[in-house]
Image (cartoon, rainbow, N blue to C red; front, side, top):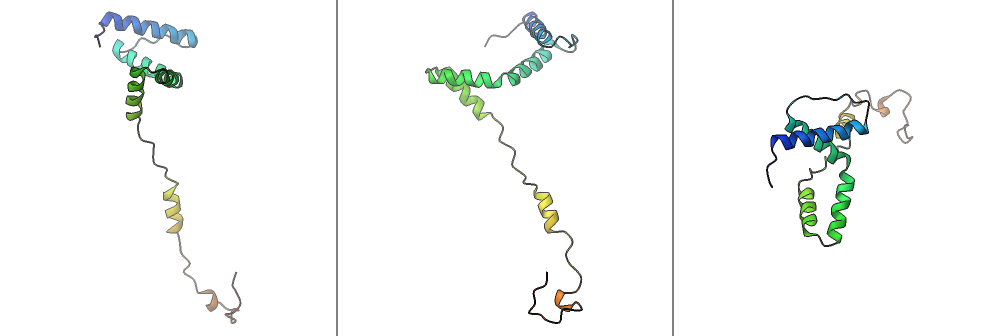
Length: 121
């Protein structure tokens, strides 16, 4: 892949910022930091916003027999971070299980419960 010159990067960043300004006119033009850093942030935002369309386009290319689309789709799937394990609120469950236990007398030892055959509710 050919390397982009600093001028090309600045031009790309400028066009992306103009597009962003068109999408949301209330944004103030921000020119901070290195052009390459801004390009990375803008491209990441664009990919995040259009990820569904990108994947659909790649999938359509795979269905049409485009090998490069298939390779790119496989690379993206392999680099997909693993899903977060579901916690099922184990901490709360364990806290409830290890919570305070009954330390008083047994129901059969309580006054008024001389008949052990009777269930205690």
